[in-house]
Image (cartoon, rainbow, N blue to C red; front, side):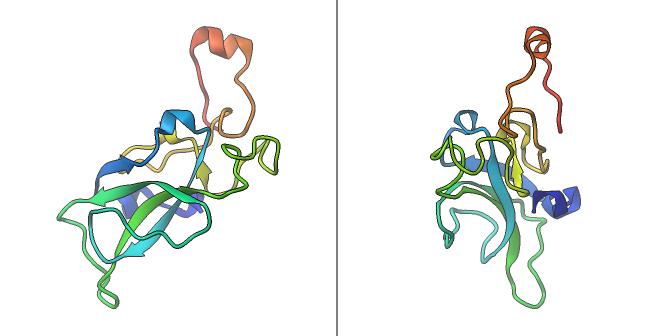
Length: 133
């Protein structure tokens, strides 16, 4: 879950690679996956699709027991709002979801009104303000 990802765990990220334009997505799911390398497109073994991943810098240390690196992967499932707008997540978002506009290398991101399925209020839009949830 994204709420369980700490800034310390992603401190060695140097870049995020987006396979899809994050501006087109209300939310993405994020997880820390154990991967064999610091960089490069990881293999993907979930339903749905990978929409992005993190690249780690040379300071990232592999696990002593497995030799793998914990890297962030961003993904969506077939029943997520981008492909099923009237489905399960018409309102609300999965626990591990964040608004991709709030994510950066080393920054875990957060949910927003948009990621939760509700448009910002008129006053908020007029002022150009968005608040994290």
